[in-house]
Length: 264
Image (cartoon, rainbow, N blue to C red; front, side, top):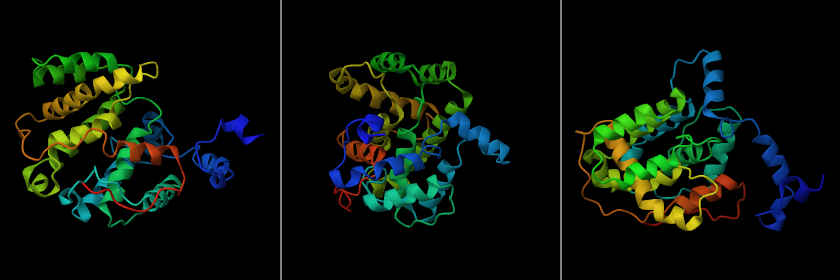
């Protein structure tokens, strides 16, 4: 079958186009393409007791091992593209026996896995999320109630809780003093990763919703432990930083991107 008929017009440089069908075929059934429910069913059959997909604690264990929480710009700075691709392919092939010292590679892949989930983590509740975020009087208790009442699988809620508790920890002063990633900065980075607007929403509306997405993620995270911290200190990074990189990796596998790290 003609590649363009099978996959649509290519978004990649001509030299890479012939390689894409083979790459996409390899990715058909991996931890990066399966939904959370399918992953959890397979994990339980294999005897795992974890309540979230194995890839999440595996990646975070690497951040802990090499003091990634303390790295300046962690979860925001882009890692070398080639290294992210290589690690992604290793894990997609089923090999999670990893030892990666570059914390930015791990942080990028953590976000990419969340971004590429085939179904929205928060289900079809995007409009309700934005509506809640627009209400500046909404308390953390209301955010807790909202999350508890969401009609989404318990497996999705477990992933949200895991990410929220992780970001609360990363934003603690003992890490954020050096990383410059306080809770607001983390929310700016993770909001477009965790929240997927419906495809029929106008792009301009999506842009206008950006501060509400950030506000929702910030307050939702706080609601899991409202006394843990305050949102203060380091200046927030621009909302768009890092997002374009993640989306590029998520759509790829091209090595047309240069190996580098963004400067803050």
